[in-house]
Length: 350
Length: 282
Image (cartoon, rainbow over all chains, first blue to last red; front, top):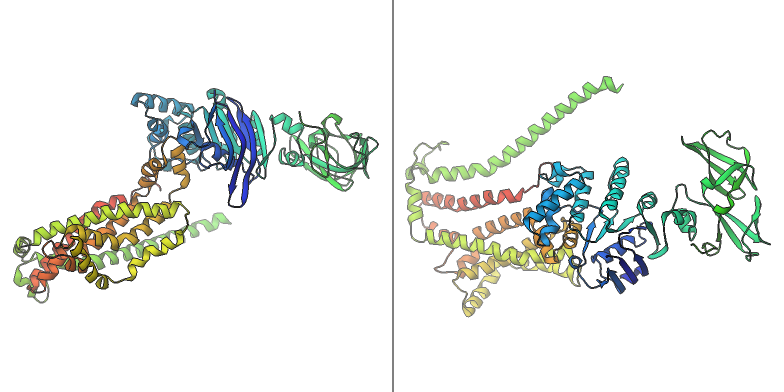
């Protein structure tokens, strides 16, 4: 009903190219997360979709309409802003009703839908208050309710949780996910928080320097990052990368020799492996423990392997201590080989 | 340690609060007295018997109340009609000034366009020329285009005088209104203009009220241009200026008091917009 399509979208601010020919198709009802560090263009892309920025080339489609030249009000979108942008001079009720009144809904319908929206976001007790009388979390919910009640098929969210404190953010994250399950709108969600992205997105588009680096489901992004950037941006702690060199179908450096990718002889490689995919005890990697950090559910080891230091997840009751020598075994099917020169993964992501 | 120190800290803190309060209220009281006392003296003289003006020492409480002077002043020729003119000119100046100045201030605050800095400075240029220098050529021009001795003419001049102030104040006010609020309105179904009217304008209301008060007072008190550009359709200050310097002292007090009242009413009326706060705690 309302898919979203970016076709070679380009946006230029002065001399900097903020978006470099973005292509992205978001399916109807999908929760798509735009993830990337600040300045990567994710908010700009969202604003181009909302109609708050004009694109310099390409096309933006919502459903089967080309909306590239339409103002925001004709794009059938609703947006939640990072600052919430709740109108301070209107009561909560009028804030939620704003979009409905602008679309000339009847008084009864406005009232019914505001009530529904308020119920969905547990705002009923606050309808008669001004935003200044609400907490940050309540204001955020007003902004979400205001966007949802308009029944726009596409919902845009620009870092809606970044102004909440950590505990509230955890709660609001689950609430937003529940909400998406209930209203099933096509949602485009911008964040720089990879945990938010992994936990909420049906798919994630990872952006860097105005380009989309990889688009896929959270589990594929996590297991098979397309390049070093995605591997180190997603996951906490990030993916480990060990420098090594290919020789006769093996990869070696001073600390190990492993079966490696074929046809790369003499090339520099990176062995990408997640901290939780390395077992301690037996194995081909020789290392020395630098730090042991007990974290309750598990212990995080920092291990020197050759010239690289890597993170390893060990059981909480590990007997390893700092300065001990140990052997490590990366799970073979979890290893991600990267070309050290380009930083790209050797096998194309599925 | 903190448990022992706490009461002492609290006591000094509360003492400091009390001292702060005394200083604040003292200063506020002094300023209020500074403004109100002369007004009170004028009112006292305006509503006393004529001879009481010359009493010495002055009575600070009304002893010989009389509305004679006041009613004589109000009923003398030209006062009521010039009062009406003054009100029309002041309100007309507010309407015209805000109509031109608010969009200009908004544009300066929101858009970056070529020559923006130049406009910002240029707005002040009209303040460089004293009205005394401009008045003769203005009078000539006004005679030629038929605006001489009309209220419209005075409104135009007063608008020109207050416009720089209105533009600068409203630009500052709109800078304080988050752009995201207007963007939110446009995503919710308004046009850009609709977002301005429904969101930016209401939020700018305190600043617009301040600009309106300043405009009213400026126009209300303006004598020079009004005197030069009008003959029969004169405003109250021009009328008062023309007649009072040949009147006895008690008449001048009545005129002075009469000039103050409308301004006070207007400011009291605009006050609620000046401090328009949406909900407590802001």
